[in-house]
Amino acid sequence: MQAEANKLLKDAVDAGDVPGVVACVTDRSGTTYEAGFGKRTLGEPADMTPDTVVWIASMTKAITGAAVMQQVERGHLELDAPARSVLRYLGEVEVLEGFDDAGMPRTRAPRREITLRHLLTHTSGFSYEFWNENIGSYQQATGIPDTNSCRNAALTTPLLFDPGERWDYGIGIDWAGKMVEAVSGQKLGVYLRENVLDPLGMTDTAFFITPTMRERLATVHRRGIDDSLVPDPDLGMPQQPEFEAGGGGLYATVPDYLRFVRMMLNEGRTDAGERLLRPDTVKRMSTNAMGDLRVRPLKTAIPSLSNDFELPPGLDMQWGLTFMINNSAMPTGRSAGSLSWAGLANSYYWIDQSRGIGGVYATQIVPFADSKSLPLYAAFEAIVYDAS
Image (cartoon, rainbow, N blue to C red; front, side):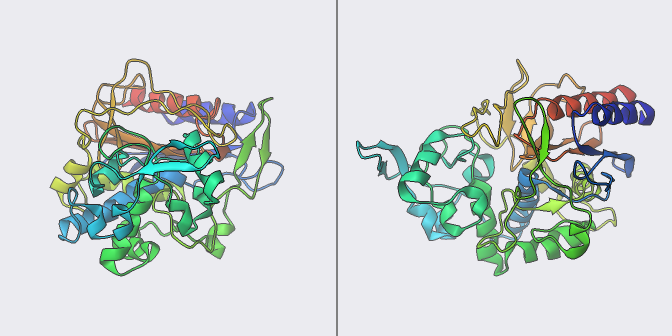
């Protein structure tokens, strides 16, 4: 596998498809593949190596989900209780019905309560401005800042539908992170460090980029309409945020994230044998938690940040407790029932508990679902399964 995977990734860099890429694979025992190719920043000498730090964006959600489920295990949070019992605002947020002639929003009270389950499965009614024009219009009408500003006001957008009615990808896990803060009495980053990251040995993962991390930081690049790639060092997360974004704020290395993947393969145990989550909790996280609802394709509302995200034709997708679940086998060879998701700058992971295989792949490119990087990720995954 190594030679074939190396050739695939190196050829993509040499062709200019991606500026740099890191990819790793693990089984339940340890890392089976690890490599990096290309440059951290186009036009600069630093190589894209496995210890390169990248913005993992929405890959943060699964780590926040682990913290949430620790609190569920300890009886401090409940999946199906009204979320307002922990955060009062979640009982006050309203549903957006439209806009009046002056462009101001019209809202109403929701018909049912938001629960933690809704937040973790993206069925609460919250959305992102990246994928819903109505959220962008609401922000413009009310002066609410964009989500990635990490200002508390950014999370005060309305629901687009009554909780539990459908799936729409959004800020729910940012609110779930705030629920962890409320019941633990700690900032999310401190809680994660003590209860998730340090036990896993994820020393290069944090909301705040340390000096040693910054020395190895890759730059996010923008893909132009002519397929050109231009570094944009301003893309990323604020380093003095009002809230630490449990939905997308972490920076990490690919090998660090692989440790989290391996923990999920090993039913909640770390490499050191420490129990991070109970086996029944891992199973709960890995099982459909949204009833009969289905994941739908995402239509971009901000093409500079994301392309349309189309699901593989004919594949049925649902959501566990912070993971997407493919209900049938993937064309790459990934087993039915596997877990996966991604980050805005074209980082991706999968966790195949049936086969005991997981992988993490990262480039630093926007828009999301990049025309070159996403197919490269799929081709890499296919090589892994062909060899297994």
